[in-house]
Image 1 (cartoon, rainbow, N blue to C red):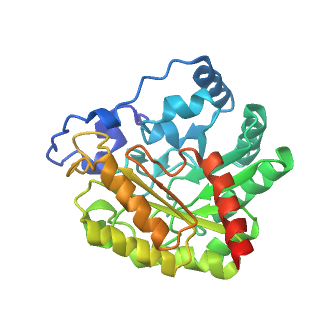
Image 2 (cartoon, rainbow, N blue to C red):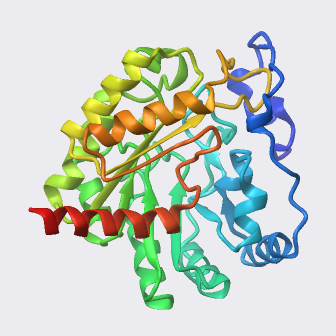
Image 3 (tube, helix red, strand yellow):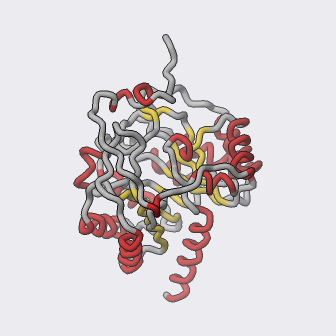
Length: 318
């Protein structure tokens, strides 16, 4: 059997190949970023290649890869580069994943140490083929980083563990990451077309359960805008996340990876992002990042320091 060439769109996203193309509108000036060329970028790329690691920075086509890699920041994507879901917004390849690599947690830990990261984000593809959704693999990776780079703070960005027993999320929480992130991605009314394999309230419940299991753990979630949502729906998502006691909210502009992906309904202006930021802080989030180029892991290390400081300040006031 000929292996798939994941660089070809029709093989990378077979579930989208039959769809009509959506037009890709010209990006406004506030979205444009420079192509990555710095020596820091090349050093980070070389370390990741040497350790044979996958990053969401490349797989998801993040616009901030040049900036982040130039200072040695990269978001590690564990459990392979093929996802069992086919979300309409996502550029990660879809299909049947390969078997887990038992040595991957150690390679991630070595890379974290070699890059000298003070804060690392570890995410993954969805692994609905695994009984625990990959929870133990997350836990092993956290433990390996703690052993190899004890001074590094760890943020996990997990799947929803929708088809797993309740113990799955507990496995990750027990490994004690510093931040537990799970993205809602969009407003509930758009789930059927944007995130069809997921369930909005199941994702909310996951975030609430993390806090139930460990109230000291920081929780985080994010959404994209420009998919067709309205302002009221975004404000309702904020209220839902605060009801789940989520600490940190990220909001960024959706960018269409290919013509086969969900269309960009509009480009949300920087002033609208500022308005969302103000509303989120007014609702009680400890930390908010809302800009056109915001992504879950963008400036994660600096934001974690601010998040921790905000909690300490809140405790001091009470």
